[in-house]
Length: 166
Image 1 (cartoon, one colour):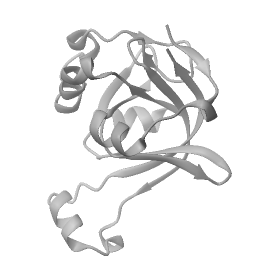
Image 2 (cartoon, one colour; image 1 turned 120 degrees about the vertical axis):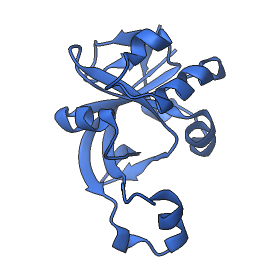
Image 3 (spheres, rainbow, N blue to C red; image 1 turned 180 degrees about the vertical axis):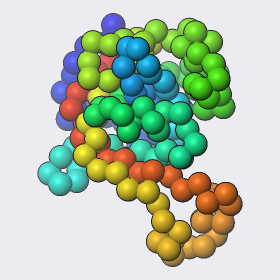
Image 4 (cartoon, one colour; image 1 turned 60 degrees about the vertical axis):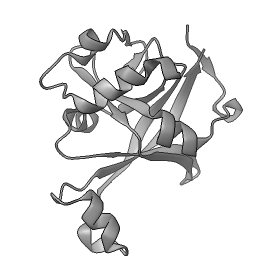
């Protein structure tokens, strides 16, 4: 059972947690919600607020749910959920019911949907959005390796308003 915790008491290695364990980004409402696996993101302080930064490609179904709603959630799982994260990162919510397919249980008692099985959840309120622009890359190899289709990520900065943990 997840309970609210003091964000300043959470200790995670962001490089390992985001880059290796990944996280599940969820957004929407009880009527229409979705989740997607993300392995790019960051945490820090910006504009005197504790924030997360996430990146979503324009073709992802979750993008429209983030845009339609004020809040999103970042869900972190233990290693036993690796296959679920793989599934959510390779299937679109436009085509399948990922909740049904993965067995994850959505919870709707906060500003954004999150998942009962998570070990940690961060509820975030969007405060800034910007699309990457090809002219901003100093290293053209990064652009060439990641954006062959010119499908530049939308970058979202969200204020972390609630932390839930087991």
